[in-house]
Image (cartoon, rainbow, N blue to C red):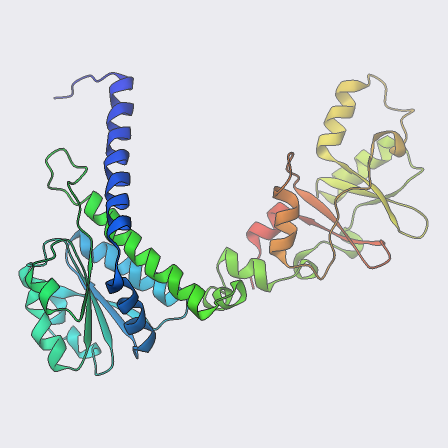
Length: 327
């Protein structure tokens, strides 16, 4: 049976939930100590990193393993239940196992510990109880203690999950800075992701050029400019002089604003309507640079003229081209 709740009550509950989680993060932030540094040292010296947990901790563990892998650290997730049914074979001498547990006494986790040690692996735990079995038996224990869950029953892993996830992120960020990982390094791990494409592909790889390039002379009339925009279907026309040097641009937005402003367009010239000295980009610029030029403005734009070193218009690139780009 559904019951009605005031909108203000819903917002208040949401804010309270977030506040409890914020306070939990602050609590762990203030309690970080030498154990965190020791964990970093073990990660840096490990052959590979295996992350394990059960329940919500398993979900958090998958994210931590994925993040470490994405920044170049050989990492894998191993579910604690599957571990003792064959998956523990992935763990070898010189490896580091990161175990996640709120209580530090979950059967499926503590059963793993002696077998991991027998295989010559080091153990770092992210654990909520400092006097637990897991905390005592780990080579390094990072305390992720919280006062309470954000759940009204104080049962569902909410604050504890956020805190464990944040500790994993803190480890990853420290490792990135220690190793001096650059955005180019990150791109190599994500060649087909948007980040990878933005810092591998260049404007010249995806721009429209040649017969597909919408152009009009600076002395042309506005009606012809509209026809060129319509025919080339790129949402703009680049205005050039006799040497193809870029003088301005007319976009779909310019056309709409002009039609609103003037009741008669036959006498309008391109020079009356165009945006002079428009934002432009080099064909050698990375897609991420072009995207930045479009978005980091008070008024965002969706299309850029592409010019060579002599300011000659040689192409057009749209936001849509960057988003859909593939290798």
